[in-house]
Length: 217
Length: 299
Image 1 (spheres, rainbow over the protein chains, first blue to last red):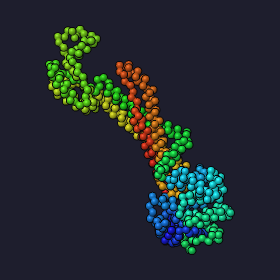
Image 2 (image 1 turned 45 degrees about the horizontal axis):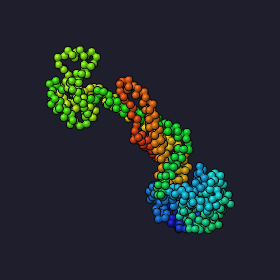
Image 3 (image 1 turned 90 degrees about the horizontal axis):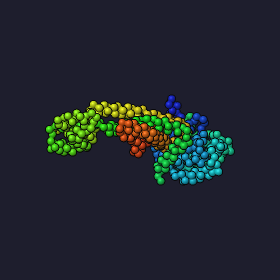
Image 4 (image 1 turned 135 degrees about the horizontal axis):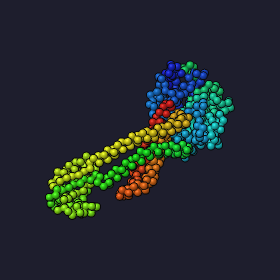
């Protein structure tokens, strides 16, 4: 499903955030990308989710070589991913339901169908009762659950998250872990970048350890 | 309904919502666009009316054809048949007897005419060509002058040339004015859209990350620009119409003082729709330029 070969990302100025990374993630796996701060976890997540383009090497996702992808094809590839960010990137000028409807709106779904699916996604993360609430009125954990609902509403094949529990207390963090595990159980490939070791103890996922931009395990 | 159509409908609805969300800003923008389009549009209508006035004015753009004194009825018939063949020209025959009668009725002329041994006036034709361009009129004058038994052909070409030059000057000034105000309209839309892009940068960034295409992001701004321009164009058309309504009375009175019955021609439905469409196009152009520049930072 995800095949990386000698993947390198060099930023202007010469800094290499990811160096010669080669790894393989099969469909339905739950993979944790771990490492210290500055190890290259976020850059790797951005490369997989096409937010960043690799400087060299190849990255094949679902049979598509992302390194050779044209600019106009990128949005269509991104729709197969569910992205969850540490800072959630929620929109505070609309309510929870409307935030979750955004990917469906982009996909061109009729409004009624979009509402139905967005409510189902909110229900999965336990936020249906707060559908009319503005994200600013939600707690940190609820905001992260809302971000997960937005990520999964389009039924992605790969759920990618970057430090999803980074700003949460341990209880809220555990709740988020459980939600990711639920999606993994129904066959969704889950790729999470985190330095939170409790994930490994609780779910024993496959681990991709990074150090100074290189895959070390 | 296809996804494409749903997205267009949603973009149009979003554009309406944005216009409605800030009524005062919308009103001010529409006034600026409306006034910017009103000035050249009013100039266009004024020139059009002036052209019509020139066409209708007595003696203007007419050719007077005077037969020689010895021309017979047969010669007059020959000229009539030639005029009949002259495509698009209207004409009327003025017999020399009628001309003499008219002269006699003029103040102080009755005694002079009575003292004449015979009618000194020739038969004449007043020709009103369809093509009133100075060059075409001059060509027709020369052609008529070559016809048999035609003694004199009179065309006030100097007046026509002056009038035509004035109209051309007016037209050119109008184009320059239209270009300037059109650029102003594009600039107004450009700035409005730039501010909107800045205000919605969070939404644009998130939408891009979760799979929005360029078209999806740009579309609502294009609709907004076109909609704002169209409404401004419509406002301009209504302002021109209102101005002509106000001027119709005084212009009619002025024309009556000169013995005419000229009335201002208001813009037709096609012209009003044209102005609306022009506003929409310029608004879309401003949005297109603004979005292209403003969205670069999201690449």
